[in-house]
Length: 481
Image (tube, rainbow, N blue to C red; front, top):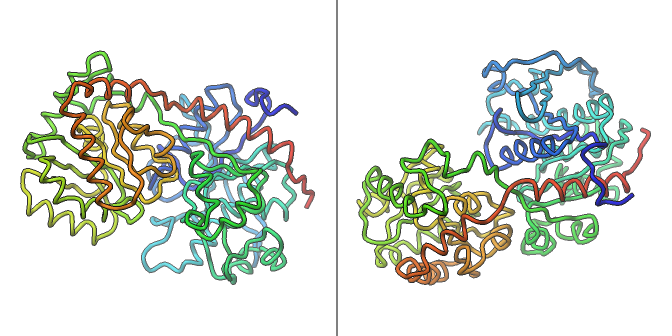
C-alpha cells in the first residue's frame, strides 16, 4: 500500500484526546485536538473526535444528540455508558463519553488532594471506551494523544480492536505513571506489566510507556523533538524504548489556525494590519504600552507562557538586570509556579514603567501581546513544538527563542527570529543584544515581513498525518481478542 495515497476518502479516523477546544482546555493539546481533526475533515476525511464528558462541558449546555449506549468490561462489574454527539456547523463531529462516576469531577487531571489512582482509573476507563467506540464505528485508525490515551493499545489487545493505532507525544515529561495496583483496578493483566513493550516503567504502571510500546506508529510534534527524545538528556527515561522503535517514530510539526490567528481580522487588536501595512502594527505597540503603563525607552518584549522551569522563567529572571540596562520594556502574561509568580511580581514592583505582569488566562491580552510587542520571548529549556512562536511570527513579532525542539524547526536565526543554544541568562542576553541592533537598523521591517510570510497552517501537518495513518494500517497488529 502506497503511504502517499490520499487517505481522507477511505479511512475512518477516531481521534481520542483528554481535552479539545472549544470544549475544555488546559494546554496546547486542546488546540491540536481541535485544529488537526478539523483540517482532516476539511480535506475530506471521515473523522470523529472522542472526549470525556466532563462536568464543565455538561454545564456549557451544548446541543447534543443521543449516540447510543454500551456496556464496558470493568473489574467488579461491567459499567453501562452513554454516548452523546455534538455536530458543529463546521468541523469535526464529537463524541462524548458520559459516565458521571468517572468524569463528573471539576478537576479531570486531579485536584490537589485527590488520590492519583482515581485519576488513573478515570483515564483507563476512557481508554476502554475508546476501544469500544472504535469497534462499534468501524474505525480504521485510532489517533491517540498523550498519556491519558496510552492504555488504548492495551485494551485493543484484550478486547480485539482491529483498528491501527497512532500515538502522538505532545510532551514526554508527562507520563501518567501510577502504582501497579492500578492494573488490578482497571482490568489490565499483570502479564502485560513486565512483558516486552508492556506498561512497566521503573516499577510503576505507565500509560505513556504502554502507548509508546504497543502503538503501531508513533508521532511527536516536531522533527527536532523526535530526535531529542531518543537521547538520555531529552528522553525522560523513555529514550531506550524510543531508540528501539525509532523506525516507527515520526516528527510532524504542529500548525496554527491562520483564521483564528489573523492580524487582519483580529477584533482584539486596536489596530489591524498585514505585511503590506506593517507600520500599522506600531499602533498596537503604542496602545499596549499605554494600557500597561510601560515606558517607551527601547524594544518592547512580551511573553505568554506557563510559569514553569521548562519555559525558562528562571533564565529570564536572571537576565532582567541586563535587559533593563538595554532599555527594554517587558510584558508577561502567565500562570503556574507560585515562586516564579512571586519573583515576577517583585521585579515589576521594583521597576514600575518597565515591567508589567498579569497572571491567569486572558485571550484578549494574549493577542495584544503577540501583536503589539517588538519581540516575543521563549527561553525554553525544552519545547516539544510550541505554538506561541508561530503565532508571534504570524503577527510580525520575531521570537527570541532557545534552539530546541519545535523552536529550532520554526525560528531561523537572523531571518525569522533570533535563537541561542545555552540554557542560561548570558546566552539570552547576548541574543537580545543582537536583536536590539536589528530593531534599530534598516532591516527591521524586512524581518517582520519575513515572519508574517511564513506558512504554519495545518494542511502541511495533516498531509503528513495522512501518510502516517496509511503506514500504521499497513503494520497494525490485527488482534482478535
